[in-house]
Length: 123
Image 1 (tube, rainbow, N blue to C red):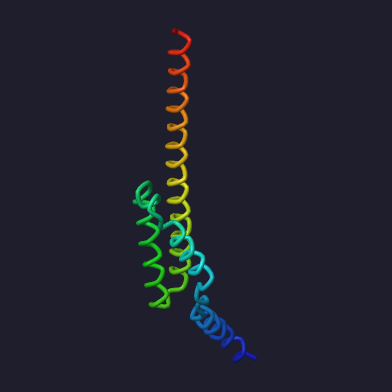
Image 2: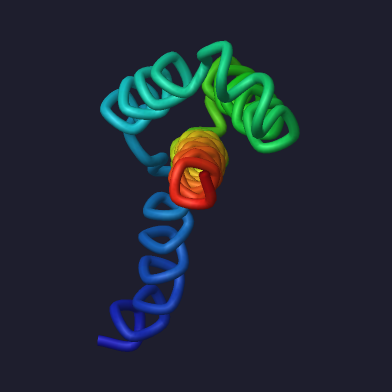
């Protein structure tokens, strides 16, 4: 009975060591989603309006690919998730810039029309 009690901590340590060796599965779906997000964000307007955010997303996706190659799947998952968010941020910044430009064009057109109306009523 003493032998069994003495071997219990050894078995527990062995079990914990083996459990620690088990690695996470490859982040296949996260990588695919990140790839799609970066591809979607990689447009001319995003490159012009949000180049920094887009480059950060591209760099993080490259880092995720490198982490997969090293079989560091947890880091790859983290970087893929971050790349996806950064790509979405780049798209939102580009959309915001397009919206600001459209609003400015509408204001300019309204001003021109107002000036035309004022000229015709003065005559």
